[in-house]
Image (cartoon, rainbow, N blue to C red; front, side, top):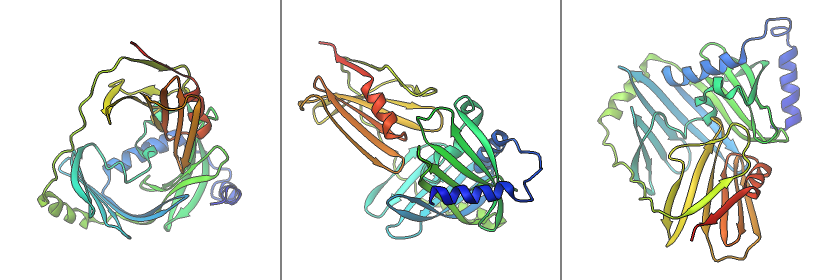
Length: 318
């Protein structure tokens, strides 16, 4: 959606009779209620996910039965892709790939990661602003903006169903207020018959667990001199792998809402070279200095990724 058009629509929502003069809801509390609802309710979404390059039509079912979580994500168009959750087992099926299983608490592909965030912790780094109300999929929704306190990361507009607190639309915006990605519900079903699909899911065979590659040891000494406020590395603090007979060290950083990966590796490439790539939320910034390749990959603006790469201190201990 064009940023000016989005601004006009939201302005109308704020100035509407239903919202004018009424007490402003607690936006942070509403976001916490969303995070709880997405995990605890039984529901079915038909929705679209769109970015600058593509648009997907999907169906997501979620049921809590006897204290266990069962879910199914199905791509409705083109190549069939299905993801099934049987409590802590997340299994992936695609016609041109061998099925595999990962351990997890939810299907990460189903929603923008913002819905699973700890908004109490994030309030140190983000403002939560109640904007107004609007109708999505024939349901009245409350609109909240998640705005970073520093201009070095993305922001969100989130439309929450007023009754269930489930997310009905989520727009990810860049630093200029342009929409990079959109999640939008077309229909919401909370029928009691949703539990019927669980029996078939229980009977379905579970593909084998995917094994992660073994780690190697290399004497890398490296650290970032600058990171955006709130970003911390996630234990284990460092992974070191052998890839094509070359060592690759990496660390994963997150502020609880967005994340990025830093990798360093010795290379036989020309020094003082730089390249970058960006598609929707994903940014790749690569630099080569002193025959060390440093790459920042993640959900951050290009300017932020470049600043991180510029401030990496890396050396190999002989």
